[in-house]
Every structure is written in structure tokens, then in C-alpha cells.
Length: 77
Image (cartoon, rainbow, N blue to C red; front, side):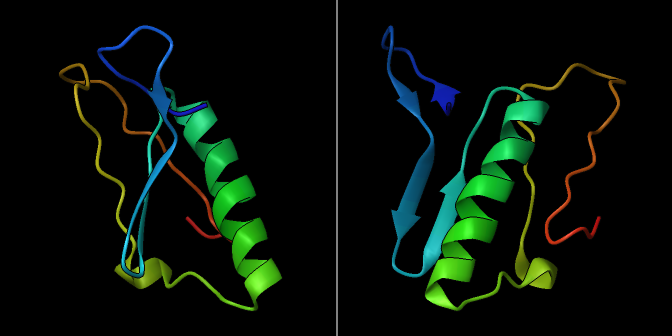
């Protein structure tokens, strides 16, 4: 899992800086799975919640006029 890089076989699933987390993927289905596994489960183990009002989805390299996928966290859109 994770976004493909320019190096064969190297993927970057997440990046951390201070209290920020970036989850990366090349496929919307893969990203949804990572959101559920990484964010929901890790936050639950630590007793934390993700503030969905302060969270963003950024899509790079999308095809023009392609449908924007909907991602859910804690069963919210």
C-alpha cells in the first residue's frame, strides 16, 4: 500500500510531521482502506479522534472531467 514513487518497488504509505499525518495512495479504493485501517484504528487505540472538519483530501494527476471519489471516515462523507 502507499503511493508509487520514482524508485521501483518503493511506496510511501504515509508521512508524519509533528502532529500531522498524510496518507498517500494511487487508488481511491486503496486510500479508503488506509483511512479506515490507519486513522480509525490507530486513533481508537490511542483514545483520539480525527477532526474531519480540519481534514482534507487532495487529488493529484486526476483525469479532466473524471468523477471525484467520496471518502468516508467514521461513516461520514
